[in-house]
Length: 142
Image (cartoon, rainbow, N blue to C red; front, side, top):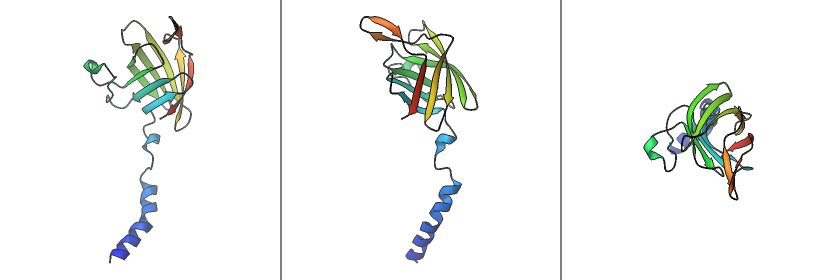
């Protein structure tokens, strides 16, 4: 009896796998941890629910996203809209003095392009100066 059940399970497993999506990334592309290797920037997003907490900013509660890494400070997502494979993101820095609009486009399951809209306000420290990061970046899902 055990051999029969095991055989049925092995035979049915590919059918079950085909019915249930193996990868939920296709259903929720704007959720996850993304990284730009060239600039060292990490972007954490969940545009479907407020589930993220920016490190050191627990008092803000749950967020839809934040960005940090080789940039000056932490940038929190304050507003967003989604249109197909494209999202418009608005970030504000941790002291509230600057804001940045970003066009976030999915180019494949794990690759996204970042394009600053209306100039670039995000900076990083180089020596004793703050310099703007590039306005276009390629992010990969981690």
